[in-house]
Length: 154
Image (cartoon, rainbow, N blue to C red; front, top):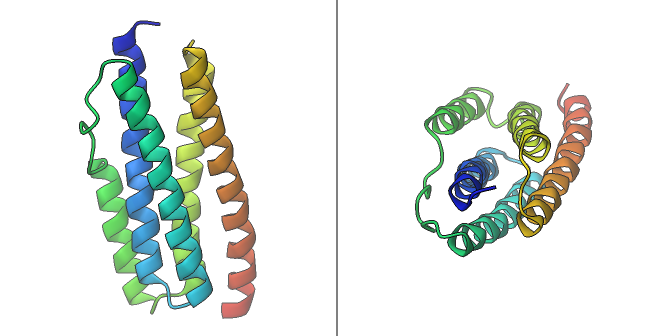
C-alpha cells in the first residue's frame, strides 16, 4: 500500500478518534452520576492516547500530524444533539449512555471496515487492531452500563 493511502486511512481514523475524545468529554460534562463522569473522562484520556498513536504513524509515513485536530462535522452535530438531549432529560444516564454506545458502534464499524478492506503495513495494522479491540471493550462496557442505568432510572 502506498504511503499516501496509508496516511489517508490514518487521517480518517484520527478524525474518528478525535470525535470520540470530544464525545466522551461532552458525555462526562453532561451526566450527573459521578462514577459515569469519571469513566467518560477516563475514556477520553484513552482516546487521546489513541490519537497520539495515529499521529505518530501519520508522521512516520510522511503525513502532517495536525491535519484533523477538531473532528468531523457530523460528529460535531452529534455532540450538539448529545448535549441538547442531556439538558432536556436532566442528564439522565441511560440517554447519555445510549448516545455514547451509538458512537462506539459507528467507530467499531469504521475500524472493522478498514481492517477488512485495506492491506496495511504490519505496524499500522497492529495499532489499528489494538485500538479496535479497545473500542470493542468500551462498547461492551457501555452496553452493560446502559442496561444497569436504564433499570435504576425507570
